[in-house]
Length: 250
Image (cartoon, rainbow, N blue to C red):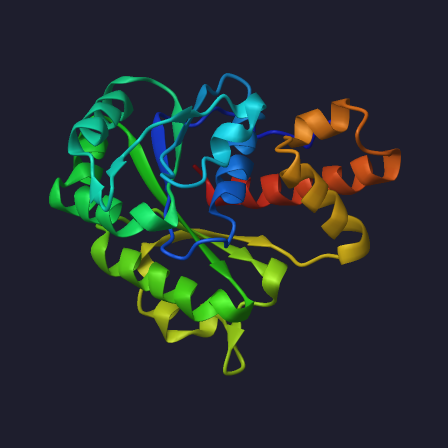
């Protein structure tokens, strides 16, 4: 059995996964977010992969993500983005939009210059921005990416994902919520979701296999690629993440 879903389907909403640093788990976060919404009865989930380099989300067959080419070289293809915005404003459901590191700056600028968040809100869509932070060498880069988004985006619906795969999100003895970059912008953060570092020989290998095969939790639990104990571990991970996401209150 899969983790217990939320009781009520969320309103029409758009979820942008944005982070200027590559290789920190943006597509993983997008897939986890999409799976959470898929677990909610009556929720229609539509996934869009706008990464111009690595269409990772689109490789999850169960998520049926559509790839949209938003970039022409280093510039944003405004016509294609206009068409995407039209869908986001007119189609019902929950949209999860995964974005690549190379298109982070132009896409962020487009959202701001075109007042896109306000337009979506006026069209009755709740807008969320999901930003991934990771430990290790990429910590400062991901903190800088969060700072840029928090300063530019006119929203109080930011969701921070703390991906501890490369180590704890700590600097100078401070955790993320103790850092100035967070306290300065805490009023814009709707919630924080933690992807904890777990035993690399068990949970770690299971997660790596699941992500490398681009499988969802549902496929893992119903398929034959994973043994019983591995399925139990993945069920634990899914339940933990779903409980955190339910607490955000979409």
